Amino acid sequence: MVLRVLLLIGVVFSINAAERPPIVGVAHIGLKTNDMGAAHHFYGEILGYQDFSLDKPTGGLMLTYFKVNDHQYIEIFPELKSDTEDRLSHIAFETTDIQKLRDYLASRGVTVPATLKTGLDRNVSMMIKDPDGHNVEFVQYMPGSLHSSNFGKLMPDTRVSKRIIHVGVTVKDRAAADAFYKDILGFKMTWYGGMTDDRTDWVDMRVPDGTDWLEYMLNVHNPSPKTLGVMHHLALGVSNIQAAYKTVVSRGLNPPKPPQIGRDGKWQLNLYDPNDTRAELMEFKPVQTPCCSPILTEP
Image (cartoon, rainbow, N blue to C red; front, side, top):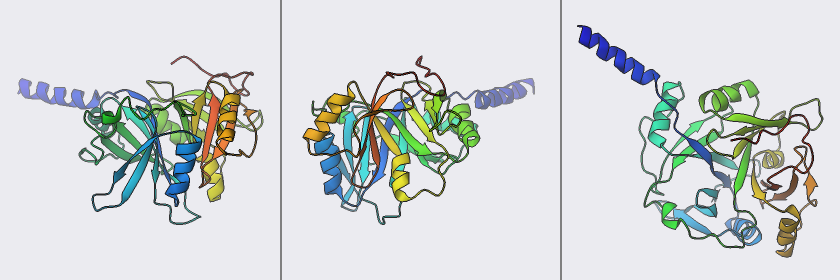
C-alpha cells in the first residue's frame, strides 16, 4: 500500500515537474501570395535569397522556402484567395525538443496535438493558437529533413540580411498575450514604446533562449488588409542600413521612404512585398536613445 502511494506521488510529481525545453529563435514566418512570380522577384531578386520548394502529395506547389540562414526562412504559400484576406499564415519558433515542448504545453493547459508526426518536410513540428487566434508553430529540425539536408547551402552573398531578428503580430489583449508568451513560454519583455511617449503601441518579447523577438502590435482596430500587412511583418537585421538601401535600389526597388530612425533609436527601412506585407530592414543597435523604455540587451 505504501509503495503504491509512493508510486502515485511520483507520477503526480513527474507530471507537475514538466519543464519547458529551449525555444531558441524565430524559425520562419509564413505568408500567403496570389503571385508566386512577383514573390520570387521580391524575395529572391531584390532581397537576394535562394529558395527550395515543397509540393503537395496530390501534386502542385505547397510552398516555397526563401532561405535566410540554416535555421530561418520566409515561407511563401500560393494560397491568397482575396484582396481582403490576411496575408499572414503563421509565425514559427525553433525548439530543441519538440516532444518535450508538446508535453510541457499540455501540462500548462494549452491545446496541443494528441501526437506529433513527421511532416512532409521531414521535420517534426506542431501548430497551436495564441490568444489572438494567430497560428503559432514550433519546429525541431531533424536529421535528413528538407532543411537540414540543405544546411550550409543556398546562402549567397546576395542576401541583403543574414538574420530575421523579429516578427510582429497584432495583439488585442496584452495581458492575455503575456499569460501565453511570457508566463507559459518564457518570453521576456526587452522594450516597449509608442507613437508618442505617453502610449504603448509596441512591446518586444524576446525568446527565452536566444536573441530574436516577437513584437506585439497593439492598438490596432478594424485594420484593412493593407494595415495588417504593416502590422504582420518580419524584420531583417542589417549592420548598415544605408548600404542595404543602396543595394535594394540598385536592384530596381523604390522604397516608399528612405531609411529613418525609429522610436527605438534604430535605423530602419520599410519595404513591402507584392502583397503589401512589410519586410523591415533594421540595424541591430540603436544610434539614439530609445523612447519610452531602455532596451534590455542581456540574453
